[in-house]
Image 1 (cartoon, rainbow, N blue to C red):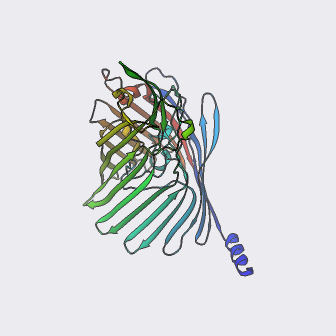
Image 2: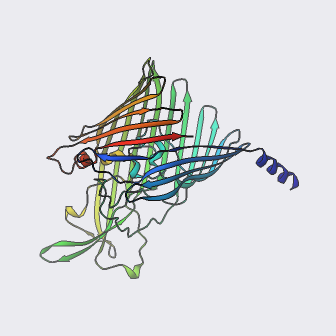
Image 3: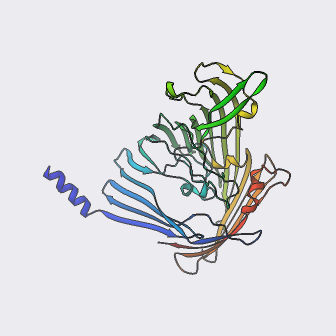
Amino acid sequence: MKILLFTFTVSVLTGQLNYSGEVNPYVMTRTSDQSQINLPYRLLSLDLGFTMGNWDIKTVLAIEHRNQPSETTFELREAYLAYYPDWGEVKLGKQIHVWGAVDGNNPTDNLNPYDYYYMFSPGTKRKLGTLSFSSKIYIGRFQLEGIIIPKHEINRMPYGEKDFPISIPVKPFVEYEVDRKMELGFRVQNSSSLGDVGFSIFNGNDRAPSLLTTNATFQEGVPPVVNQRNLGYRTTTTWGFDFVTFIGDFTLRGESSIFKTKAPLLSINLFKIPLDLYELHQEVTYAQSVFQIEYTTASDITISGQYITSNVSSEEYDWFHTLSVELIQLPNSSIPTFRPGMGTPFAIFTDKAIMLSSSGVMMDDRMELKGSTILNMDESGYMFTASIGYSPWINWKIETTIVQFKGEKDEPENAFTKMEDFSHLRLGLHYNF
């Protein structure tokens, strides 16, 4: 016991503290009328780590701020303990996981819910950490990864945000919480001289609520009347495939996922079931894919393109009376349009899109130029983004970004049309440490 205590004390005393972070205040102004867009943003991000031999303690902290009215909140994004033995790694705590091969829009990566306030941010900045246990095992060219998430977590949506055009006016009431909260994921990856190939499976619950039951009144001679719709979370299983390979100076990446989602078996107290309650039996199979090609020029300008698709392959809907289990017919309007509860967040915009982007530096890396566009291939519409960053001193950068949405006036439900009022100019200051 004394030897263990001595070893632990020496490890702590010889451990190494490391930190990094970013301060990023900015303002967003509409291009239409120069009014300010008041949404929360991460004013400060701080990564803290403490290393003791094969052990790491890592935390990721953030301060979220809203300019008008001035509001500030503290956010613990990650906090976990990691152990790195010779055969792999083990992590326990609040984590943000990364699966897939393409940049940003990953249909295979469904372990963490999304924060839709940051849906246009890169990488892990758009994700929310979840309490989880993860482990990786390295066997030759293979990497095996298993993940256990004991508690169901949901997306953060911008409810009631008048400055975010596609926000939901009021946060919906969820009648049925998840009964089976534990979620499991497994991934295997093979690396070779040709590139990497990965296969994954994840069984969990949707990150956004959907219709599960309704209260309806039936009267002879007249159509049934739907009085109330009740929400809950479907169970979804995903099977994923991803790869990255190289052809000359080109890098090819791709990933696809097949999702099978269905309404769960509800645990309802037999003595409290209303006589007018009807359950929706729903099974939907859909798929999402992203293919990416990127190229870096001789002058270090990176050019990339993505083709993003989402489609529903099968849908089954049946209503049945909760007490008698008798199948009944309700109007088609009682079933809302299917919306995925997992998958890439850009699926809310379009089922088919092309995304083009480029970036480069000049003036001895003092100036950074970036641009991207998303073209809606399913309906009319596009999003265009361009930014210029200039570093007057080391670790400091002034950045100006313009974001422009364009839809079709004759398509008011088109997501790009709704987002036209979100077109804006953003001026920000970055300080990295």
